[in-house]
Image (cartoon, rainbow, N blue to C red; front, side, top):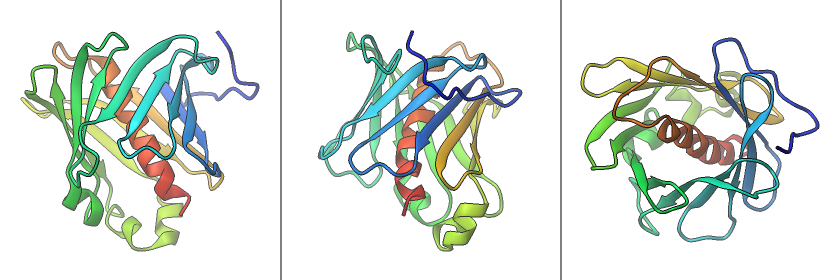
Length: 203
């Protein structure tokens, strides 16, 4: 496995750390680290595509593909992204609540492979709405998310953006296993949020 020269130490309790440089002209790419500071994934977002296409590989050499995230439509305010294996097998999908995410706080619906709603992803914290209108708040108040199971509200995972004006870094903690929702869908959701929020982070 190829390891980045400057490995990242995961914060206690976080299983994955997604890290990307803020200043990148075309497209986006970021590394996914495990708790042992080793690269367990490398995500590549292609530039100049009308339809979002994000690929997660096992390492920066992109020798083995692990996961795909593809937008269903070219233009979709409440975008839906399919999470699939390289074989084409769909693990689930992610749908962003467009209006709420743009003006109030980021919110997503998570569906299993049969299109049944399995979980929600919601931005937490009192500064969520202010981040959309005040740049200083966006810089000084990193985002946090909770992934909750739809059936009983149990917290399955948490995403936490670390404060750093030069590097976008998102920590992922897995709080509970779910018999329906594959952990790769949760990791895919974190990568998708890192791609979207990373673009907004460098405004």
